[in-house]
Image 1: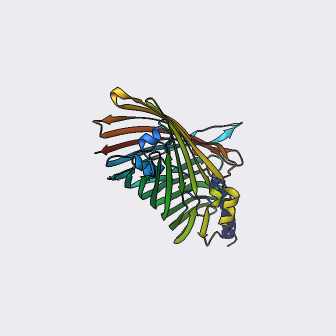
Image 2: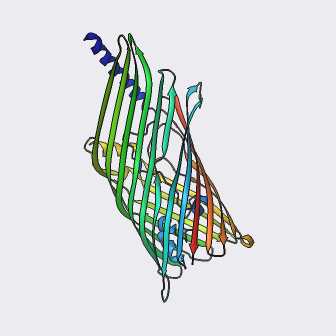
Image 3: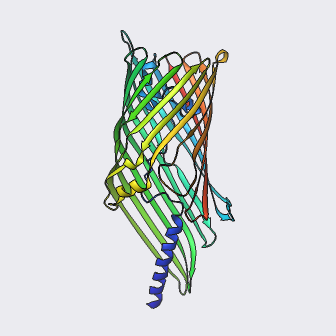
Length: 425
C-alpha cells in the first residue's frame, strides 16, 4: 500500500512538471483561435499583400470592401483554391542562440472562395448584388519538440478555419461615391490534438506515460460589414470599412486519455479517460479598415490598415472559467494590421505582375514573441479573351516564439499558394 501511495504521489508531482513543460510555448490562459488569424481571399489581392480595401472591384469586394461591388459592370463567377505548407522548427538554447534541431511539417489544401456577382440594370448609377462563401480565418498551427532532459516528446496540432457565407450589395450615391453592405453567416471548425510521450525515473520509481487530448469546436454566428468607396479623381481611391461584432455559438467536445506503465519496483499499468461536451458563446469586437490606392499608368499602388481592439472580446458564458473576461483584459491588446501592395500591368500581353507585404501581429501581450508574423507576397495574372482571368499568388511568412524562461524556441515558416479564376459575361 505504501509503495502504491508513493507511486501516485510521484506521478502527481511529475505530472505537474510535465504540464508546466508542455505549456512553455503556449499563448495566454484564454487563447481564442478566432482572434486575429487573417487568411487572405483571392490570388490577386494576396499577390498585392492583401491591400485591397480601395482596390477591390471584383467578387472579392464582398469581403474586402462591399462598396467595390458597385464598380462591377458585368455578371461574374469566381473561385479559388489554397495550398498551405507550415513548418515548425524547435530547439533548446546553446549559449544565446537556439539550436533548431527538430522540425515538423503540416500541409493543407482547401477550397478558398466561391462568389457570384449580379449587376442589376439601372437607369442611372449602379446597383450590384453578390453572394458567396470565403475562408476568412485560419486556425492551422503546430508545435513539435523533444526534450532530451526528461526525455519527452510533444506534438500539438491545431487545424481548421472559419468560412463566411455572405450576401451583399452596393450602390452608387454619386459618380465618385459608392456604398455597400454584406450580411455574413459564419461557420467553421477548430480541431486541437495534443500527444505527449515520455519516460520518468523518480527515486525508485520508473514509468512511461502518454497523454492524448482531443478538442473539437464547431462555430456559428452572424454579423455585417459596411463599406464606402470614394474616388475624388482619376488617380486616387479611398476605401473604408466597419465590421460589426459577431457573437459565436461554440459547441465543444473533448476526449482526454492518459496511459501510465510502471517498470519498478513492480509492473503495473493505469489507463484513464474522460470525455464530454459543452456549449458557450463569445463575441468578437468591432473592426475598422481604411485603404488608399493610386492608379498610375499601368500600375496600382495600395495600402491598407485594419484596427481591432481585442480587449473588447467577451465571453457570454463560460462556466468553468468565470474569470475569462478579466483575463482577456489583461493579456489581449489592440492590434493594427497593415498591408502594402503594387500591381504592374503589361498591356500588350494582358499580364499583371504583383508584389506586397503585410504584418499580422499577434493579438496578445505575450513576452515570448521574439518576432511577429510578417509576410512577403508575389503574384501574377492573365486576362484571356477579355472575359476570363487566372491569377496566382505566393505568400511567404515567418515568426518566432520563445518560452518565458528562455530555454526553448519555436520558429515557424509558412508558404501559401492561391490559385483563382473568374469569368465575366
